[in-house]
Amino acid sequence: MHLCICIISMKKIKNSKSKKVRIIFITGGAGFIGSSYLNKYVPFYPHYQFVNIDCLTYAGNIKNIAVSYYPNYSFERVDIRDFKKIEKLFIKYKPSDIIHFAAETHVDASIRSQNIFIETNILGTHNLLNMAKKYGVDRFHQISTDEIYGSSGRNNKTVFTETSALMPSNPYSASKASAELIAMAYYKTFGLNVVITRSSNNYGPNQAIIYYKSFTKQKITALWFWRKYS
Ligand SMILES: NC(=O)c1ccc[n+]([C@@H]2O[C@H](COP(=O)([O-])OP(=O)(O)OC[C@H]3O[C@@H](n4cnc5c(N)ncnc54)[C@H](O)[C@@H]3O)[C@@H](O)[C@H]2O)c1
Image (cartoon, rainbow, N blue to C red; front, side):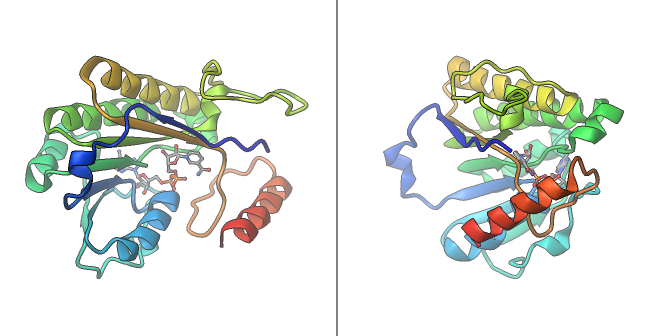
């Protein structure tokens, strides 16, 4: 496995707004990484409001969220592909920030069936960007993946940087690369404050693993992950 954590910050967060009460949309908060984020940060930032937007696909499970009784947490079962319902949420909550985890995420599933990846990962992301622009969101964090770079080669010697070419090699990574490019376009064209992070594979509790590439490799990575971060 190659480790790549890449952060592309398009603009520093505006100082004038950084002290205001933040209302943060977390999309995909019932999934593996989104729920981990909420479980850590809802108690950590009691003065921020977290709104979890998730339509609960096979990968989402409301039981992953241990902080649902906190007053600064709320849940909206909404599909990010549903533009009208998403707009209603922007009107209702007036979010200051969006951390966009929601996605179809399994590579092997994307090879079997592509449409849902295009709809959720590209059109769903565009719905959120469009609303973020319209309602003046301070910061849009696009959770991306190192898979947008494609393969690091047989010897794993390729080093990727923020400026490496995007060469996705399957429908999942192509849909995530597309979402990134649209997010970058919203920064360049409309000045939306966009941050993009590209992490490598994560393993841990509450992960909906449906396809295994190499069990041994995943097991070793999981041990490494928990030792370092738990
Ligand atoms: N897991 C990894 O190793 C990894 C690595 C790099 C990047 N990422 C990225 O991190 C993010 C989260 O990954 P994860 O592993 O937690 O994914 P996951 O599949 O566990 O969770 C995805 C969540 O999104 C929700 N969702 C899916 N489609 C939706 C829709 N149309 N509307 C609303 N909610 C929807 C699901 O219900 C689920 O709760 C994704 O954007 C993924 O591309 C993951």
